[in-house]
Amino acid sequence: MSISIPRGTQDILPGDVELWQQIEQKARELCEKYQYQEIRTPIFEHTELFSRGVGDTTDIVQKEMYTFEDRGSRSLTLRPEGTAPVVRSFVEKKMFGYAKQPVKLYYMGPMFRYERPQAGRFRQFVQFGVEALGSNDPAIDAEVISLVMNLYKEMGLKKLKLIINSLGDKESRQAHRDALIQHFQPRIGEFCSDCQKRLEKNPLRILDCKVDRDHELMESAPSILDYLNEESKVYFEKVQKYLMMLEIPFEVDSNLVRGLDYYNHTTFEVMSDAEGFGAITTLCGGGRYNGLAEELGGPETPGIGFALSIERFIAALKAEGVDTNINEGIDCYLAALGEEAKDYTVGLLQKLRLAGFSAERDYLDRKFKGQFKAADRLNARYVAILGDDELKNNIINVKNMETGEQVEVALDSFIEYFQELQQ
Ligand code: HAM
Image (cartoon, rainbow, N blue to C red; front, side, top):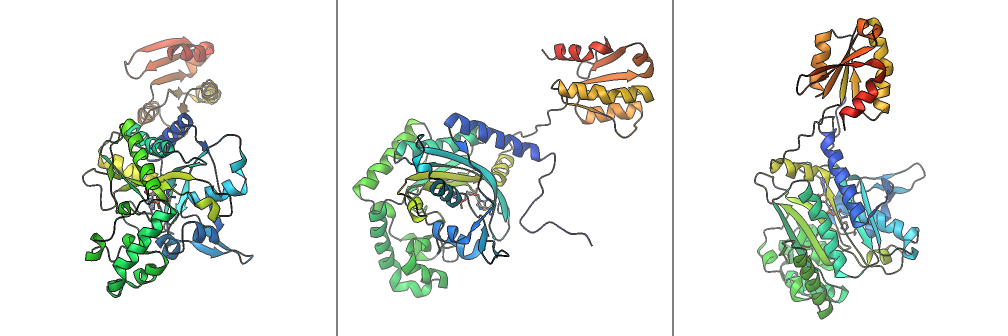
């Protein structure tokens, strides 16, 4: 019996992987421009990092983690997200002492969540994310948002909606928390058992409940924006002012609470507005997490970041019909006729490649016609034709596949000729 791929995972095959690479490259280029540097953290971490960092009452920690005991009886967890690991590393490696501040980092790699798979939702997915640590300037909130919006735009996405909210500082959150408890307490019996637990522990999570989403008390729940203290209000206004300066349209939605516990002040999500995108429209999520470093044993450090999955990025490109055909073709295909000519192309192919060209030859003992077909399939710009006779006479025929023009070239200066062709 054959073995199939685990549910919620996917193979990314040649033909599809090129788009992944293009997005990854664009993301890296943009990070270079914005001065974010790459960090690579382990795929698994101590479970406690996520229960403390992401939060005990979140769906991620309660229901979605791949947690296992290793042979030394340590509880480890495949990372469900990248922020807690990055902040763990920031604290552990004492990056708060770096001369270069704020510390601006990015990461790209697989994350794991045991969720019910559906369109746009996988159990292993690849996140690209950035984290800026050490600055309390609302301008960096706007910078982080502009980075992701520019990435989407540069890849050709147009139908995007940016939603922002503020969860305020500790004091504002406490006031909002009290109001939420007052609001839900009298009728908490009508809510699911998770929400009943959430009421005392973390009432904000009730607003995020997938089961009780349509309960009438949800809509009338007190809005965080009415509980922001002066400082939090001013901070949020500044973020909005900077977004306007950067000409990034946005909507404020006080219901945007996000599914992780570490947030305060700015939170945001980018959604796809494309028709037929499917039920899950969130492409990217992020926000500020000023208390996280402290929670993980470090000094008080402000931080903000976002993460997006490449899977949903690609789904959005497809939903918008963005032309993602990137079969660039190869520079040269070497077609050979005769034993000696075939042998000769082994070395010639190497020379072409070392000179910087993408090149290929036949490995299936195809007839001449079959080799041309193979060249066509590879979208070769030139085919260089070598027979035993040509080899004896030190010549090779170079055919331009676009114009059909064919030129006879001295074999020993073929590489130089090919280099000149490209200029
Ligand atoms: P998150 O909202 O849990 O935030 O995930 C961020 C993004 O990851 C989502 O918007 C979505 O694109 C993608 N994503 C999440 N789960 C799945 C899934 N099962 N399948 C496919 N894609 C998925 C975070 O992870 C935070 N660490 C973001 C952040 C960084 N906040 C501050 N810094």
